[in-house]
Every structure is written in C-alpha cells, then in structure tokens.
Length: 300
Image 1 (cartoon, rainbow, N blue to C red):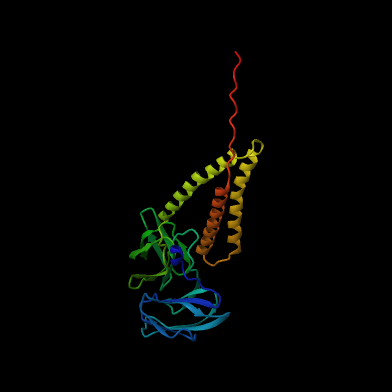
Image 2 (image 1 turned 120 degrees about the horizontal axis):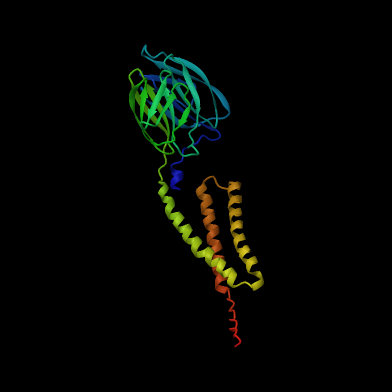
C-alpha cells in the first residue's frame, strides 16, 4: 500500500493529461479553445500541469502562445489531442510550438528518466563522474533513461548551467535557457519512496516458514505413510505447492482487482482459511504408533 501511494496518476478512458512548459526567458501567456482550461501565464522556466481533463475521442485544439517581449515571438498551432494520453507542449526560439506524447509511468527497470527541453536545439551534457557522462539532444524532446541515479552536473554549450538529483523511479523534465544559462526542472513522476531494505523482513519470515513447515511436512508424510506409499505421499505433498502457485497464476491473470494490494489481501485470506483447515485436521488426527522390530540376534 505504501508503494501504491507513490504510483503516478496515469491517463485513463475519458481523460487526458496536459503539461505546458516555458523554457524561454520571457513571461508567456497561453490560451486554448478548451473550455476545461482557462488562459494562464507562465514565468520563465515554469510549467502548467492538469492531470484530470475530461475528454472523449480525438479533437483538435488551438494553442496560442503570446509574449510582450520582442525576443520571444508568439505563435498559434492546432494540436490533435486524444483521450488516455498525456501531452507535453512547449515553445522554441523561432516561435514554433512543439508537442509530444508523454510517458508518465515509471520505467520497468526502475531507473530515472529525463526529458530535456531547451529554447533552441542544442546538445546537453550530463556528467556524474569523470568516467560517466551522457550527451542528449535537447531539441528532440525524447526521454532518456539514466542507469546511474545520483547528482548529475548539466552543461550546455560547454558551460555549467546547474545540477539535478536523479532518483530511482523518478521522471523529470529539464528546462534549459541557454541565453541566460539557466536551468529549471519539473518532477513529472515522483521517485520511489519505499526503501528496498523493507524486503528483508519478508524474506526472513518466508525462509523461517520454509524451514519449519516444509521440512516438518515432508517428515510427517514420510513417517505416517505405509511403507509402500512413502514416495507417493511425499510427491503428493510437493504437488500441493504446485497447486498453490497455480491458484496465484489464475488470480493474477484474471485481474479481479485494480490494485495489487487487494490481490495480496486475497492471498492472505486464502492462507488464513488454509491454516484453519490445517489446524482442524491436525487436532483430529490420530498418529500411527509403529511397533519397533525385535532385534535380530546373531548366531554364535
């Protein structure tokens, strides 16, 4: 449940997400013909975000960027927006409005992703150590996965513009203004907040359960079975593990619940029911007392 709290809000049916960025060095006003969004103003290096816009199908929307500064020409562009998507929109130095479909879900590998937007197209260099550096073209607005989390130094046109701390699971949009050599960034998806060390208590409990119950169960099935059926009952005991795994596969494939935590609560309920049945059978069971064989005397 703690992990689910840090999961990003993903666009769903009849819904879309919109993020507008201003990498320029001018105050810019943005307006659209969408009734869901009122005109707003973005300062240099800031962004606008709306994660819950009611939307159905695919529609074309007019976006207008205006600035009172001569250095930042305004522009208007029609952009096609479809439901169940997240979009990012920004303006470049020649007044061109660019957009992309954003992926706000955390990467499967868990490493951070960075999307770099700049007012002009250029290469941006990220340096972690003397031996680790990555160069990204800031004009293509594509996200890049970083395989080493940490505090990276950002350089543009050979000059340092700032530092950014990339954490596991996070998704970042970097805004660089090379005119004033300034850098800002937006956390699109928050990084992981639950430490992986919390897995240790679970593994310790599972290991203890394996030692206590599996070995005891095998010993019980061997000692209480008839001589001619010991191997068969031991194999049947191991087969119950396979059936348990099969139940988990079926429940997971059916996707009964939207949240994984609900699946685990269902497994917990099944385990408690199994423990009650097992306890009842153990209380009613009568152990077989085997007679010891008489010692064989050796002939003199």
